[in-house]
Image (cartoon, rainbow, N blue to C red; front, top):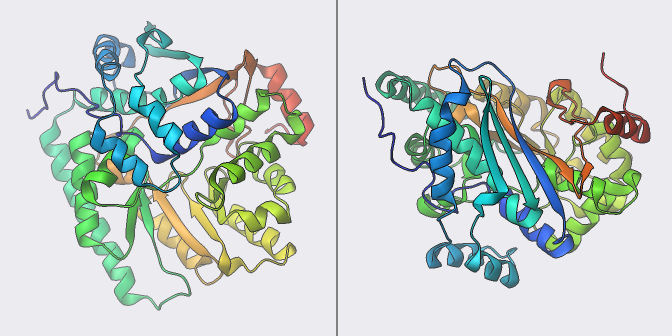
Length: 404
């Protein structure tokens, strides 16, 4: 059977993470550099073999990660992104992950991973840990048939996009999609092959990747703005809880002043987000990102909100990124493309579509400054909080009903 070396490190560079880790990191350095944070790993589905078996390999991978530093060409690349500030690059020049901040253990068959420490020192662990767990897990499978099936499916995706472009009438706004698959990829080598193929075969529709290292190496556009942890942090940084979304959005505007203008909407539910997303923010942000709940209903709410504010929806962008595959992305495009600009961030179904059951793993922010923080997702299964009292209070403050 064909399997990769079990000793080659999963992570080869500190650039091998999602762009929004850097953008949130910079914002937190400038706004809340003193914040203390805790992150916890969770697997939402049942693996084919216990993840606890990965503990020794994961410990070795973390030792390697903590030995890495940013190289000059990597810092030069980040410096070339106009929204990266010189003082942040100076921090990265001397940055190294600290092994004492991350703890790994077996909890029965499960994998227990906890990160605690200053947020600007530990927030970067997330994507690396998820990529490590995924790749270590899939190294135990036969790679020969998996790669063959992955290439067959990738060829089908390319053919489907070409047929769509050839056979369907043009819409007001073009179809564009991105790769958001780093954290749940089959392997680093496969991820690079997928992106190289999409770059070469679909240059008009494939517009970039969240993977900063592969963006640099393959000449792609790095894609990303903010994740849930950014807005969640503001639940415990001194502002009134009811005002934390507005405070987070305001700080983002002040930090990036027109760049990185896609706001994430589902930290406290779409309805609660729109209640805070007034004319001021609606004009300052370029658009919104969907990551939970029924996507058509979410998109219609977004367009209705812009209409209510008398903003031309064709000047804004909706980005869909929740469990997308190509058929879902094309269906959403057909529904919305004559009314608003669109983008589609596809993750697992690009980087790990191999015919094997995938892992649904996350690493979420649970506490900031000793206080619980939470996400009230529009998909109930995505809500993650250890403190039910705080969760109930958050629902009360934002008038979010408890799901049945």
